[in-house]
Image (cartoon, rainbow, N blue to C red):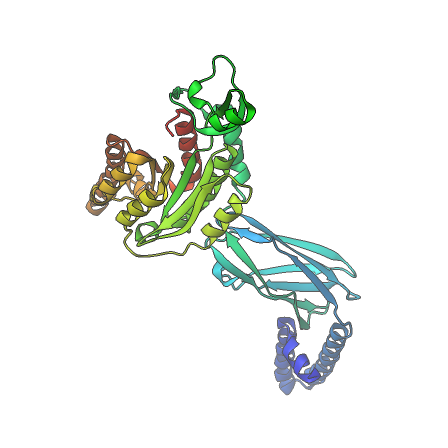
Amino acid sequence: MFLKHFYNTLFLNNRFFYILGSIAALFVVGFFIPFFFVVSKMLLFVLVVLLLVDVFILYNTKNAIIVNRYLPERLSNGDVNKISMQLQSLYGFKAHLSIIEEIPFQFQKRDFIFNIILSKKEEKTIHYDLIPTERGVYLFGNINVYASSPLQLATKKHVLGEEKEVKCYPSFLKLREFDFKAFNNDAVSYGTKKVRRIGHSLEFEQIKEYVSGDDIRSLNWKATAKRNQLMINQYVEEKSQPVYAIIDKGRAMQMHFNNLSLLDYAINSTLAISNVILRKQDKAGMLSFSTKLEDWVVAEKRNSQMSLISEALHNIKTDFSESDFSTLYAVVKRKITQRSLLILYTNFETMDGLKRQLPYLRALAKNHLVLVVFFENTALEALTTTQSEDVLGVYDSIIAEKFMYEKKSIVKELKKYGIQAVLTKPENLTGDTINKYLELKSRGLF
């Protein structure tokens, strides 16, 4: 076992082979000049002795390298996640270390190497950043440390650290970045008109004694009989409105921009806006659909709601099927009976694509306030701003402008039927959606 371990962990450095090659060349010269032959044998003997000494001091200290890796409890998708490694050398000399970190295969990096030098008993901490672009489970492997002495003739391999799985959740690191919008008075921008709500609120607060001026329609006859005096139900302004984020996970949402799919952008936005919705005292819920409805979280205002939404978003799987809006309409009509704000994350590339689904969107808009959020194609925008050098480039630019114009026409078509719309770049999705939600709320539209 010792010989096997020794064989698997010992490596000869390039410096050793460079010196050995020089001695071999000197042997060739010694074939013609005997003096150099004697010198070559002496140098070879010295090289072998130094190699043995190098190997001995490398293997003489047990557990010579100590490594601790600090990982977050979970990774945030699409964000910068900070990882750190603390290293300590117990060698009695200045150690030259090459650290190969086995980061998860999703990052597709096999040369993640750090080169450092540690003095006797010295400690150092290495920091690095990872930006995941997929949700799921990430497996961090071992930490391979290759240690050399100042001679640098041989290297000993240390396999350290433990394998650890870390789940990657939708972007939660940016939640605080958008928190201020929930309480910032400037969020209601100039030009936004507040509408006075007319009607009788139905959110019950308490039963109290009747006084002159109270609405007699709210008399509580059972409480009146018990107390032998007029009692009345008191209501407050209804603040907790249901808001559902609906995520289309069909093939239209599989397009990628900046290494993230439109589906992942929608998932990250859903988590952020759910946090703002709850802070604004509304009820947050979500669901996803393609051929059927899944990942349903009923809109509530409880403390555990964000955890439920986060878990549901983490488990959303991609689907390359054609999205069935008729199923969405049927289930929403049956299950969501109270008027709600429905934020639908989807993508329409052409007017024909919209018109196929428009009847179902109009049907949803009869009972709910529907906000359709879809995406600009930033790749097409780049084509329109690039100087065309030939006829083919002119054609590409004209077609790109046509598709961009059609996107804007989709917004007008939706508004014609009373459906709210947000056309946004993928990277601006979260901010634009939150701003639209706050605008609709300030106008009292739901």
